[in-house]
Image (cartoon, rainbow, N blue to C red; front, side):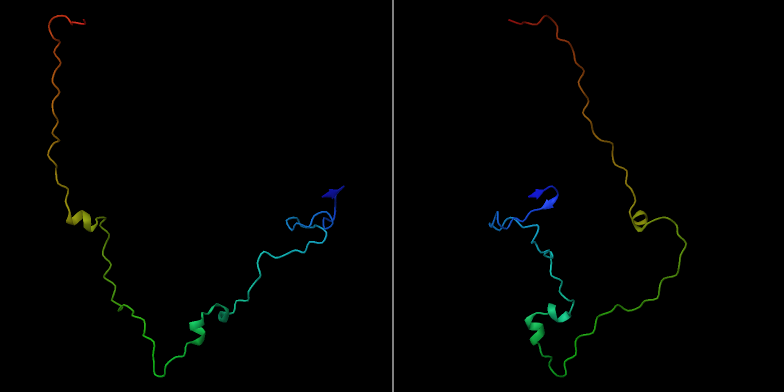
Length: 110
C-alpha cells in the first residue's frame, strides 16, 4: 500500500507471509556467495583418499611429432574428384502417352 508516495507498514494488516512489508523488509541476496576454495568442491572419496607408496600415475599418451609434408602447389582438386569419376547414366525410361481417340457415335446418357 502507498499513501501519496509513501510506503505504509503492512505488518499490522497482514501476517500470512505472502506479503512483504516495504518498510521493514531486509534486502535478501538472491544467492550466498561461496568462496572459491577447492576444498569446498571435493567429494568424500577425494578427501579421504590416501596415495599408495611407489605409485606413479600414467603419463599422457602423446602422438609422435612427424615432419610436415613438403608444401605442394594447390591444384584445386580433391581426392574425391580424382579417385571417383562421374559415370553417365542411361536415359530415363518414360512410357509414351497414348494418343486420345474420340469414340465414334453419340454418348448414351440414359
